[in-house]
Image (cartoon, rainbow, N blue to C red; front, side, top):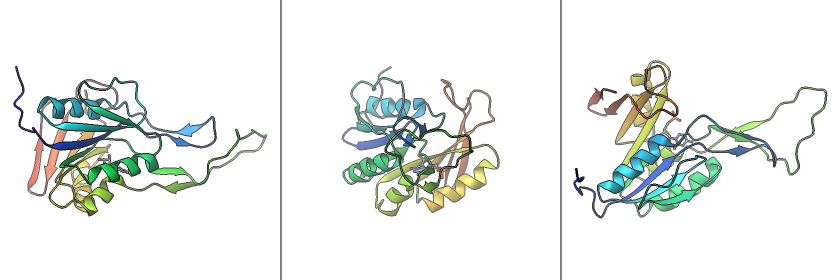
Length: 199
Ligand code: C5P
């Protein structure tokens, strides 16, 4: 079935995948995001006629046909690309699993081990979705929330805090949802309420 071109002429940015926060030239901090959700959304937006820029962290996925991919590493890189590209966008979908903390400094050389324990000082990263929300105007901004419990309440507060049009709540505990699977089970939440969809 041919998709209706309901988004013809719309410019969309989608963030997807995991960011990589370097510790030294060898090690980094990341998370389990595969990028599947964001890549599927980028492809779906394209199928409906949108012009799509996919700002992607680490992933093994191929770029969806007709989509422009911008590959980034750290949360800071993703922030820079997303805030710049948002200026000319109509729609932004924030699917990426952005690191919340990053090493305060990146060691220039591989850190040598000693017999002692060690710790790494972490500092907060910038919230990309919230930064876009602050300058949103009449653009459409969509967020995602991955919660292990009390999802709806916490997603509602993110909706407000980040000034999103709506937020898609994923549960880690639902069967068929979570990392790396081809199915998902989500709840859409906006200022009017929430709607849970089947698997
Ligand atoms: O606050 P939390 O990380 O749960 O919010 C999730 C939503 O915010 C997702 O849409 C995610 O892509 C986005 N986000 C972001 N930049 C961050 C953290 C989260 O864009 N630094």
